[in-house]
Picture 1 (cartoon, one colour):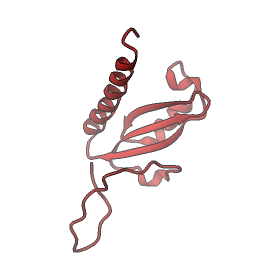
Picture 2: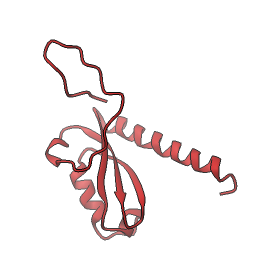
Picture 3: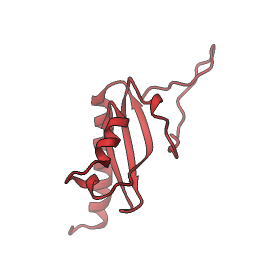
Picture 4: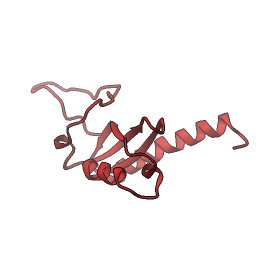
Length: 111
């Protein structure tokens, strides 16, 4: 992850907690790769993904299609993490999905 904020002459460290976005201006989401989280109030569900163009990806999620995100049209971007490469962003996406799956499996061993 790249820490982009800093003060000249200092050695800043990344924040220990990333803040969720209530509204994200897409102009800041260019040139890098991102792990992102969407939320649908209609489904009361989160969707985890990665992309190098979050704005275009959100538009795709909101279009008519048969995939999971096609079930709702109210997806909102609620969180992003920035990475140097799409490979790093995808690794983070898979890490979060594995943790989510493992937590579900532990709570529901017969599922």
